[in-house]
Image 1 (tube, rainbow, N blue to C red):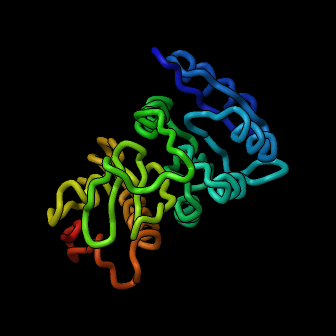
Image 2 (cartoon, rainbow, N blue to C red):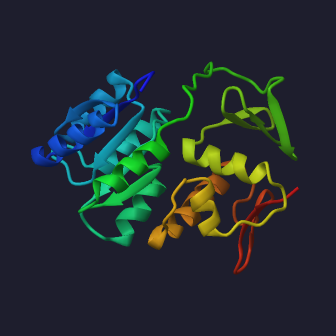
Image 3 (cartoon, helix red, strand yellow):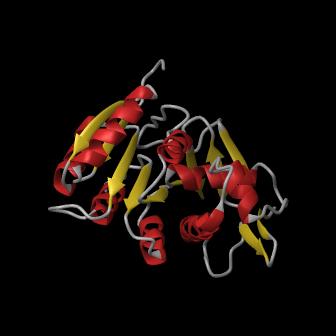
Length: 236
């Protein structure tokens, strides 16, 4: 794999770390490992990984707090939460605090590798911190514009901080204006998953987070609308 991507594994069970490291390296990824939340946070800051596999139950600092802290610092590295519990609340909380995805233990290695691939950033995105809406901007609707070069979204010329997944969902819907997509279609198109199961809840949470960031009044959205019983669409 040219331009090797690095996955940071934050997990306190050594046997799981060893299996993940072996399989990820076999797929061509570099790996870094941390066995507690505090070390994971430190390595996320200094090691600049392309993706983090983050266990929830960790010594020193739980996974949710690691993710929350990274997002608060403006770090939008893709994060996949590993949870041993089939708790709906865990999944929703993980997404609410800015994780891109979650996978429940025990997981199949094929599924995990597929999700890592689907979540790794397609391009190395580095945008100047003080970037403003420029020529590469695609005005989408009203005050909203998307800079497809820097992968940034602006409202009234001010940059909005989105996770990679939120950005991809917005650009996908915005590039097909007024076309309604079901949650399952969005899982396939935006999340790149060919199987769905319970994961449609992920779409709802991501839409809600996106509305909170881009809408003036998230309770009465102007951009991403719901067609009841069908799905979501970007209104123009």
